[in-house]
Length: 404
Image (cartoon, rainbow, N blue to C red; front, side, top):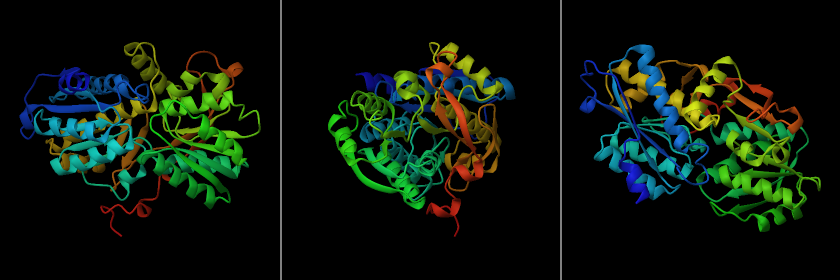
């Protein structure tokens, strides 16, 4: 069985011999990359996240001469909370996994966060979008590292409304992530003087968006907000093109779009899209150098922001394990919050009391085909959102860890 094989196989092992840390259980730090390995989010996370985690371990040990022994295992959660939960329990109880990372699909991420708390392990989430991970569902064993629905809404949504996109219709993936993204974006639209004229919930995942797009087209909304991701976003944009929706005067807002999505769509269909991300391979010399290393290990594919988040998150986790001299979950996460973050992909940052990792975000515009110099040369920076503005204010999330 594919899931069982992936759940039990060590896909990568990186170790440096030396004196073991006295307080590290079993003398091994074991990291589990739990992702969508074959479904709609597999290009965003999937096998590329395993590559990124492996690079982080190798780079950390080489740079610090750490004596930690680290192993990486991987599994496919199939975007199902029950499947992900079963894998997490087996990893934590039987396979002695200390930390789980990645976890796209917010319903799975929320389940893993609770199990991680119950087992006193650590969860460095880079793949789930729901801002509830640092809000009402926050706990002392979780760090939300990369992005969230509040950031996406206040980046893309706010910019579009201010540029005249004042009436919205939402196509929303019918699970925790889609609901949270619709909720947070609608709040921003209304706050900035716009209105929501309709919304429809779409099965996740689905191949056929025709009936939903026809409803959006009939609404006459200026903006059709795509509160979905991965394969669903790609399919809805492709089918919208077939219906001539953009040519008819309406615009699409991809509320969560990743570089692999744009690559799959092609610039002819994706050009002009505004989107918010916290990483792009071509931002600076350091991101370019790392991304070229990654691509050489991943079939020539440039990294998604999720891959970058896994790399940076694993680096900071290992730094915290070394500093705390233990792999006890809550103690390591507390140390991750205490230590400043600093890596070649996101620069200097911090982890707040609610577990939210803070760094700048970028509003990107997808280039026209004539502007691109070649594969993966897809974005131009429309605006930089400073770290202190990119994420929800600490006192507004209702996280029980935050003192009122």
